[in-house]
Length: 203
Length: 203
Picture: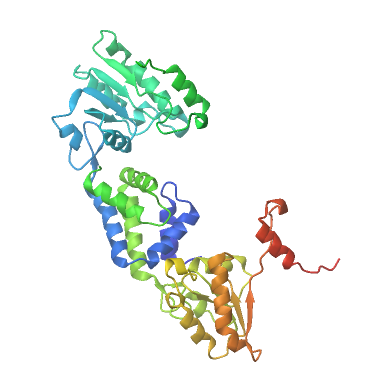
């Protein structure tokens, strides 16, 4: 319906995640009317990202070199390893400033429906990193949803032999009520988890 | 938080319409993991659009040359002119196959809040097109929302002198119930308009 190249752009944008046909059209027309300098900068950033960004050969996080900044940082505690699904989870955890260990980015979660099994994730690389016994705590920080829980359970089983002699502790992030939330609005699963995980406080 | 160029990409994507920070992040990571060929094609399409697409000098629609395909088509009825806000409205109307006249794309609607007055729209160009008296019907097909209605009212006042001798008829698209919709779900304004615009049927 549109002049060829405009339709091409709408099609290309429509392939991006969470962008439907209407959004693709809106973005395309926005770009048509935008300053050419801005569009050029976007195009160049896209190319530059693919040229310069790679994934850390140790943890799988995004990196500007062979290893990411966290793996290169000698102040990070190599004995605590936090397993996450995606690089964006690393950013979320870093923002809390609660964690000074290292990461392992799986590249997703197990999902039989989408055909994602252990071989599609960086599971073999995780087992290799645990082999030398430096890591003493493995934090399974996959998402608190079905796929994330399944992935955590799977990994817990995989590393079980390493925990037998007490040299490795496996933990999972706490589930419970979100801070700042209203108890009455919590879904029942979350509220149930919050009860199950209740802790003694000293009054 | 991210390696520089990844953050640059998130920032660039976040400037697009209807893309919030979370979506920008999701798209950026999608692109990081995508086939470089696909990302290159997207970048090249962006550049090509800005290089090749312009706006028709007659009607303001997107065009691959000085004039758009519709203005160049001699079979289109030059006596009926349909005023729309955006090029995407042209596409929507073309899909109906109900209209064989020509278009005038305003480039938006009047919006005092966003600082869009008549000078920001192609109003002067519209008046110039009406000057030679070829157009006998002007269809005001701006959006049926507050800005679109205000724009239609404004244009109707502007062209009023041309309608005095009966040489120009000004019309507005019908408002009413959407076809295929449920009456009970229609909002009261739409239902009110549907009543006001009711037509006699021959049984």
